[in-house]
Image (cartoon, rainbow, N blue to C red; front, side, top):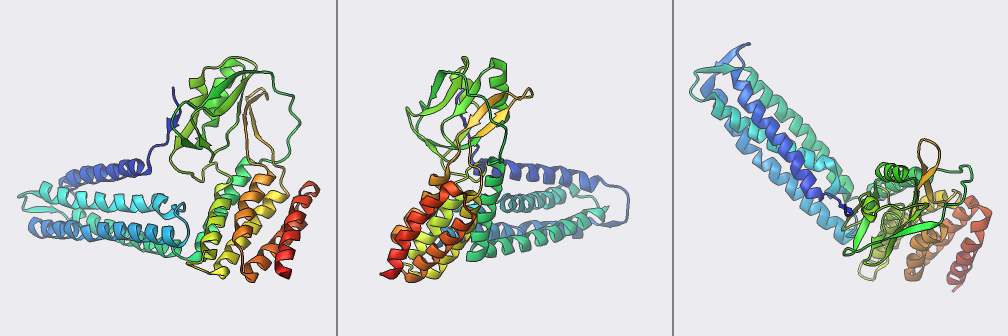
Length: 380
């Protein structure tokens, strides 16, 4: 089985919308059959349902307009890699709910047919669903507004970064015995793709069944190139398909298991702010402050590969994760090279000083070398 390709978000969104539409269809067919409760004239109920259904097309257009405007704004203002609003399930669920309500109103109006009366439950259900949709649209507007604001965007990126770091770097654990010799190396034989997620449970089960240990060389977020080594199998034989079947790949990086993505996005926002076309050093400093918090977390953490065991406590899966130098390089190198504003250079230097205060002794030297260079820039 080859590596799994992540289901495109538009496909997953389409499935969610299909579920809402099917639910609306079933409800629209069933509601006019209700025989209990007060009755209402069918003609008036039908007119009301059709008016609501046709009017909701404006809500659908509003959602797509928000999506297009926010995505364009974020791509041109922050970074083209930031797709939080586009990927937010709330956007597509609201869209699906609106479509489901349209289907319900039209289906119910047709199902009523020539009946002289219909249960008053039908228009009541339509009105209640409409009130729910109004609440969803209000929440969607607030999310869209937050998505184009600098501070909420930076905070959201940093929150995602902290979540991933906490999940992947689990802290000290007992020393594990050395891995058995390498018996098989899995090679990537497909076009370039981004490793988005590692299905740890599936790989542990496969390794346990074969009594081997799988050591992934690529960490989530890395691009797999044709011919590159993906994993080593230690202690026995395991088909390549069993390893590749536990890898989910796609065309772009995601926050699911990528510890460097938040650093990359914050650095991209700072770099765009430092470009001659934008020239907004204050925005760069705000991005640096969020980077400081993430880098401070990394500076005092124990950064080791993720080692996962079976029920017997035997290492079955080892996932390579970025080390200190990779985090520092992603967070600092590009910004320091592009920084010309005294505000940015000073802000970066002060942030690294505070990170140094939190860093473990073995990481102080690399921070000191950067601080010396930044001190020289400030003096100039």
